Length: 283
Length: 308
Image (cartoon, rainbow over all chains, first blue to last red):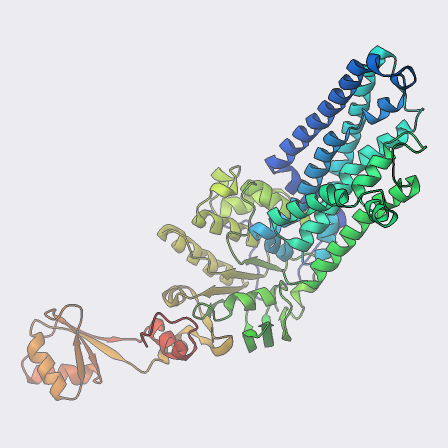
């Protein structure tokens, strides 16, 4: 065995010389943790392909069907926006973002790594915030790439029927932002739930249930039920990517400002709860 | 400096008391063994010192400060609580890089500690494929990362091969010789006999002893003498008549006897008087094992069956 390369200490060792504790170091540390797992890579690649594929499929379906639509409806540019961000593809994005967010911390509890982490960094709150920062960056970049790509794919397909739109029209820009932001929002919610539940499978399941299934229990046909329904991220996303403002179908619709508020509050509350919980509990 | 001070430390989980009014001190420059039967509260105590758990009462400080109050810990205390506390999907190198960076430690240091524990060749392999012994080495590398003045290890020998055990003993000795505080928990007495200078012994969450290893070993009341003779039967009769308790060592017809109740000079004289030839006559210092068993007999949490 080799000898320790550090200088020997004496019994009268000086107080520990330590550089200032920087939050940016914690962020880089969590960044290394995220990218050193293969699951991060393939989750992002697969989710991106699913999102883009769903945009292509939705646009292609309209492309094929437009000739059979009525004269007024066939050229409705609303398709061009909704086809860019179809629900099935973006539900997959919600699922993978929330799962990766939840696992970012629940897997540390599952393996016990959280104790190694906490001994290295006794300041627990900043660790959670650093994880939140990393998830936000990764999934914001992912969201932008997925949303812009989905938009371009759908417009390319629909331009063949002269049914495409541009970012300047039909609330397309709003829809693009709503789609891009969906991923980081779900990742932060996952992080919050993962911190509270501390069990990998349970927190992934719980987050998926709350984000994807629970809204379906509350119909939009009654006022009270619609009010609850409008409080979910999934409903907010659906509202924000719809370019039309008038009534379309039945029931109560969520408002645009209300939906942005939902986008803001869920991740904020999730991260706040996470920070509160780690400070309060034994590790 | 660099003293671990535990003062009236108490931790209750619901109605179970894991640690009860524990007070002791661990000093630098020596290896201090932390002993107790399984379930005695050793790990809980280490967790309390490291601020992973909040104490129900009392305090634990390192160098006068609560460890949890440091924003970054690796330069203050290096600790290995459980070798499994890693993510199996990461390489040893990536695991250490992330930890080093969180404390503002240069990545170069990762290569140094991996070399130190002998894991350089597997640095890029996923930790999930490591044996327990290799994970212990990785845990020790983690503890050394910040070159800390205080080191704590919970059962570090578990899963190590004989070569690893020798290496780790030498490492602990050297760390102590460098003036560091080395605190080492184990339920294996023999290990402490070989490694530690000082002992802190607990049972059922309470302090049993805190003293040098030698003094602790001397606590055992049973001093025995080993005698080897080709005339075992004759000597047994002579010694028994003189009031000693004689047991054959190993099988009943062996040439070695364990004698309790007589000192070596008296046994030698009796043998000479009776014309018994001796091949060996040695005082056996009571083993740490015996001292420990005697002292903790009342505080063993889990006894095998009803054997007592």
